Image (cartoon, rainbow, N blue to C red; front, side, top):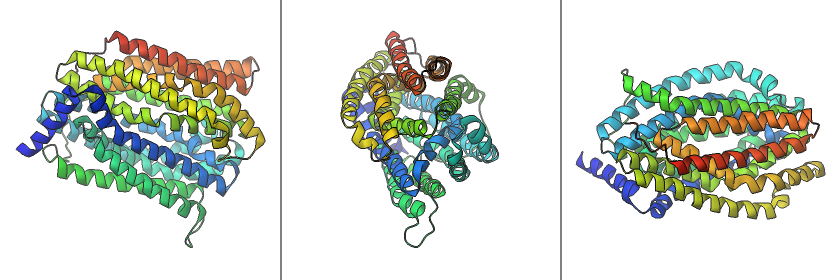
Length: 457
């Protein structure tokens, strides 16, 4: 028992009192590598599907917001429990952290089963009538969605273990396990999509099966390692949920779940607007956001460490440290994203040609990327604002900023410019790019004001 407590104390000491840059590097580096591998998986997925046929490489991107809507529940639970667990660890209240994790894991297991069943029933309606995929992509999109439904259940368990590791300050293990899982996906993709080694060619279904198998291997490994490394917290299910836990899940996790859910629905409507301009616009949109994934790999890998540092600092009542984390994160990661975006801007045509040789798609992609890539540093500031909200438990302002960005600009403004004013796809790309700038500036102002520096436990 003392050994496990000593390990927890060691992580706490580094997160709360260590040098900001050294701590960020230690916590973020494994996750940045994982995100880079994960982005590579998304690119490889699209690459092999492009061989299977035409615009099929867009299928994972088209269907993603439909199941992200259901995963929004886990996003909220994860935010609330990461805030609670990291602040408990920061205050050396390890028994409370263990009770919190038990409730978190049980809730994710039960909700994962229910949400998977619901998604299987409604995914065709979402894909056909909300996303409105182009007719030639409807069948492969539905095939992919029916298989990927199983990933919702597995994602819930993955979220529980990953958030528990990270709230303690151990980002290395979930990152390493994630890299191994993504590597398995790399291997399975061409085998299942194209039918290598005598297996049938499954196309989009093969891509989804590869994802589900890889996620299952990740969950099993995380559970095993967590039990071995942190037996003091352990893996226990419970029938008892405290009123305090429910209160924090609703007040902290509720806005984050609502943010993700409305964001997912917004992305579906955004897809619907884009898809109304035809398959060239659909392919251009997909290529543009693959570029975004590359540029944001470093940032996404760093957001959870930022949340953990903020949460543990607040739990230790080190308010000045929490503010330092927020401000320095914006300056550091904003600069890194700007550099990466510049490099991508210079090679944008060569990368776009990996996925298509259609001159119309390449030309439209160059136009979109010339506006979109310079705005990615501002998108980084939005991600950091969400991370600060997760760690502190102050999730309402990030919710408002996200809603204005998505529904006020990426939906309302995009539709007005592209359709009402007749600007076509130019209106879409302008609205999407401008939304990043506005949301980033708003997030930076909120972080700098520092009114979020209040512990919730």
